Structures are given as C-alpha cells and as structure tokens.
Length: 71
Image (tube, rainbow, N blue to C red; front, side, top):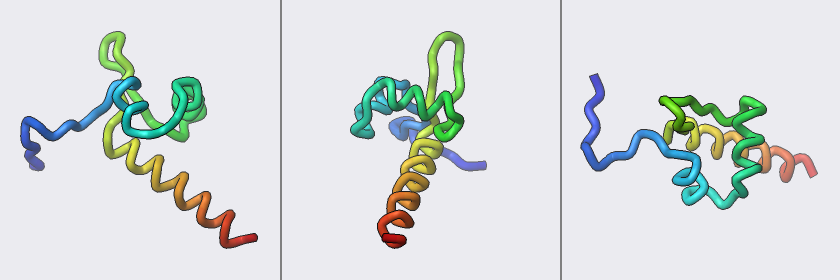
C-alpha cells in the first residue's frame, strides 16, 4: 500500500489545475470533454488527479516533440 504525506496533494480542482498549467478554463474543459484529460466528479466538484494531469502534459510534450522532429 502506498502512503502519502498529508501535505501531498493527490488531485486538483479545475481552478487549481489552471494555476498549475497556463491554459484557459475553456481549453481545459475541452481537453476533459474530448477524453484527452481524465477527470472525475465527487459530488458537484470536478477533480483532476495530479497523475492524470502529469500524463496529459507528457503526452502533449511528446506530440509537440514529434511534430518538431518531423519538420
């Protein structure tokens, strides 16, 4: 079982995720709606797991790198 310190954040609200990545709110919601960025709801709150945000960023970086190499 993995243990996490109480100070370690495991998920972001949309507002917190926007503070972590330089995107507009609508762009973030479009990424979630398309399924490229995973999110989930707890009650009325939409959350994004830190690991999912990291994976999404890595995929965007890899896509940008492959386009730059292909040129």
